[in-house]
Structure formats: structure tokens, C-alpha cells
Length: 214
Ligand code: BG6
Ligand code: MG
Image (cartoon, rainbow, N blue to C red; front, side, top):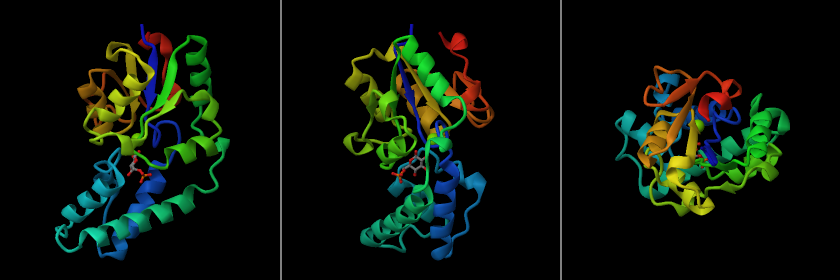
């Protein structure tokens, strides 16, 4: 039935959510803002510049910075984040991901990465899964980020697969919303209370059972 799996990257195939959180926390601290893990849920899946906007709004500081200053802050966060992921290797791939990819390929199901991250191609290379991936969506090429459906629709369109034959896999609220508004089947990774709009939720990526889904 399904011909394409579109995986989010951060928090689904590798643990970069923590690094994103730490990098934002540090940046926020530098401008006198405290963020916690609960607030961080609202940043997952959200683009770099939109994440910064949300942090500034949260602290009522949205008007304290010019657009240039905001760009500088977002770049500073990314430089810090890039340093954190510099040493990533195949070891950083979540358990079960490689097996899942192999299983999908055996069934002739295509694999795409639908991440909001501009660092996705770098991470895919570091994680050693370049050859498993049929397509990485470039978030700069779509109009709207998650929770809009654009990233997921782009993957389906590029690979010529009908929406009804696509499954999206996400760990973020914004991501599940994006998959659902694309009209696709949504697999959540994480807490089913947080991801209550997903069609099915697994605690971790390694828990995904293709038999449940096909
Ligand atoms: C998403 C992450 O995958 O990518 C977000 O969940 C992150 O936390 C976003 O902000 C953008 O990533 P990047 O690497 O382009 O700053
Ligand atoms: Mg994610």
C-alpha cells in the first residue's frame, strides 16, 4: 500500500534534539532569556529563524532586535550547534534505523528526509546513510515550514508518489501537524500525549513495526 516513507531527521533518526536545545539555551542565556524543556517542545521541527522568533516572543523581546541582529543571533546559534554535531558518526544513528531502512528497501519502498534543518545533508553524510536516502527535501526550496505541509508534499511530488501512499514519521507536534495537513499517515515518535494528533505513536524509532503499518 505505501510506497514512500518521509522521515523527519532531528529526534527521529538521530538525537540532535538535545544539541538544538542546548544551543538555543546558550544563545537565549546570552541575551538574558531562560528557556526550559517544556518550552523547547514548541521549537521542535520549527525553522531556525522561526525558533528564534518564538524565543523572543516568549520573553516579550520580539521588538528588541533588528532583522540583522536576529540573523546574527540565529547564525551564532547555528555555529555553536554545528560544533556540537561535528563529531557525529554512524554510531549516532538511532538504534533500529538501519534495519528499518533495509526492510523498506526490500519492500521497494522509497525513503526521503523531510527535515526543517539546513544541516540535514551534512548529518546524512556524517551518519553514513547517504546511499539509503532517495531524496532530501531542501527546506529553502519550500514556501512554508512545519506545521505547514509543504516539506512533506515536496518529497511526494519530487518522487512522484501519491499522497495516499506516503507515511510521515515525526517526533514534533509541528511535524505531526504538517504530515496530517499534507493528508498523509502520521507516525509519531515519543509521547502519545504530546503527539496526540498522530495516527500511531511509538516510544522510539526502533519500535516501529512495518507489519502494523502495511
Ligand atoms: C528541525 C529541528 O529539524 O530543524 C529544529 O527540530 C531546528 O529544532 C530546525 O530548529 C532547523 O534546523 P537548522 O539546522 O537549519 O537550524
Ligand atoms: Mg524532529
